[in-house]
Amino acid sequence: MRTLIDNRRCKYIRTIAECHSISKAAQKLYVSQPSLSRLVKKVEEELGVSLFDRDTTPLGLTAAGEKYLDYIERFQQLDKEMQLEFAAMGAGMTSQLVIATLSLLGIYVLPKIVPNFAEHYPSVDLQIQEDTSLNVLQRVECGTADLAITNLKPDSEQLQYHLLCKDPIILAAPYNDRMRQRFPDWTGDLDHPIPADLPLLEAETLIVLRPWQNMRVAAEAVCRHYSFAPQRVIEAPSLASALSLAGSGRGITFICPSYVRCLAPSTPLIYFSLGEMEDITNILAVSRRDTANPLVSKFCACAARSLLSSVPSP
Image 1 (cartoon, one colour):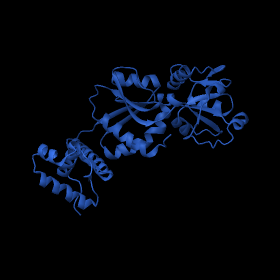
Image 2: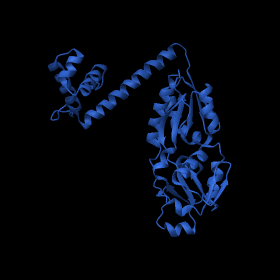
Image 3: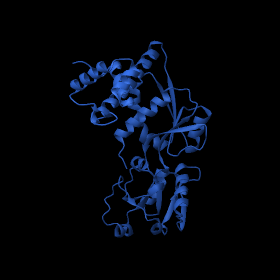
Image 4: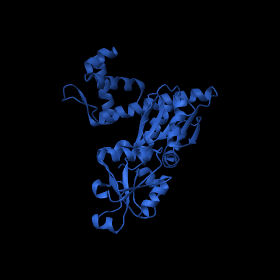
C-alpha cells in the first residue's frame, strides 16, 4: 500500500488549507490548478474521505481534513526529530537535559513522561534534580538546570513557562459527620469537586505550608481574592503532613489533585473547587527565555502529549 503521507503531499495540502483556495495555492506553489486539483482528488480517493468542503466559501477543511493536517504535522515533526537524533548518534554526540523538580511533583509526573521521551531520544542523558519550589527556579535562572517542573508561574522576566497539564488548586476537607450532613451525596470523586462556599468554611481551621512553599503562596492568593479569613490557621511542614492533618479532622487545606493522587490518603476527604482562581496552579515546565538547548522544546512537547493521555481531566 502506498504511503498516504509524503513531503510533497504535506506541502500541497497544507498550502491549500492556508490559502483557502486551490487556485491561490497553485499560484503560490508554482503548479497548475488542474494538477493540484488532481492531487487532492487522488489523496481523497486513497483515504476514502473528503479533505475539503467544496460547498463553503472560502474553501474549508472537513473534519477528516483537520485530522489529516494533524497527522501531517506529527509526521513532519517525527521526521525532523529522527534526522536530528541519528545525526547526533552518527557524530558520537550525547545530548544532555537537566530537569529540576519538586519532589512530589516529580514522583507523580516524571514517570508518565520519561519513558516516552527516552523512547524518542535514547541518546539523551537525562538528569533529574529534586529541590524546593524556590530553588528549582533559581537553578534554571542561573543555568544549572535546563527546565524546572513546578506548579506556579515564575515572576522573573528571564523565565518562560510551558503548560504541561491542568492541575487546579482545590480545597480538601475531612469527610466527617458535619460534612456528611452538608453533602450526603458526595461520592469522593477527586475529578469532580463541589463548588466551594467559602464563608461556610471560615469556622474550619486552615492548614497551610511554610511561607516559601508554592502551595502556601497559592493559598494566600486564593484567600486574598475571595476575602476568605478562617478563624484559625496552623502551619504544616509538608503537603503530606497537611493532608494527613486534614484527613484526621484537624482542618482544611489547599492542595492540587496531582499531590492527592501521589500521597493517596487513606482517610476519606471531600474536595471543593475554587472557581476562577483554580487555574492559579497547573503543572508547568519553566525554562530560560534565551535557552540554547533544543531539547527543552522537545521535552515540553513530549511531556504535554504524555500527560494528556495519562492524567485524568478535572
